[in-house]
Length: 152
Image (cartoon, rainbow, N blue to C red; front, side):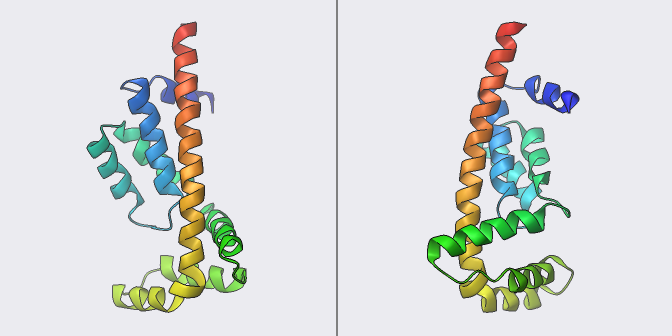
C-alpha cells in the first residue's frame, strides 16, 4: 500500500494533472459501463491533460470482485432517491447477464427491457456516487501531494 501511495504522490505531472487523473479514473470506475471504462478514462485524460496512467489505473476500483457490491449500492441509492422498489435479486441477475458474453443485440434488448426498473436508478445512484468519490479523490490527492512536497 505504501508503494502505491508513493507512486501516486510522485507521478508525472503537476499536482492538478495527477489529482485530475485520479478523479477521472475514480469517476469512470463508479459508472456502470464495464468494458468501456479504461478506454473512456484514457480518452478523457488525454482531452483534459490529466495523468493518463492514473486515470486508467483507478478504473480498476471496480473489478470482478467489487463491481457487484458497488453497483448494488449505487442501484439502492438510486431506488431510494426515485422512491422505487429495491429489487437486489433482479438487479444481480440482470447485471450478471449484462457483463457476461453475449451478442450486442441481446444486451441492447436486455438493457431496453430493464431501463425503467434497473437502469434509471442504477445510473442516478452511480452518477451521484461517482461525483462524490471523484471529488473526494481529487481533493485528497491534491492535499497529499501538496503536503508531501512541502515535507521533502
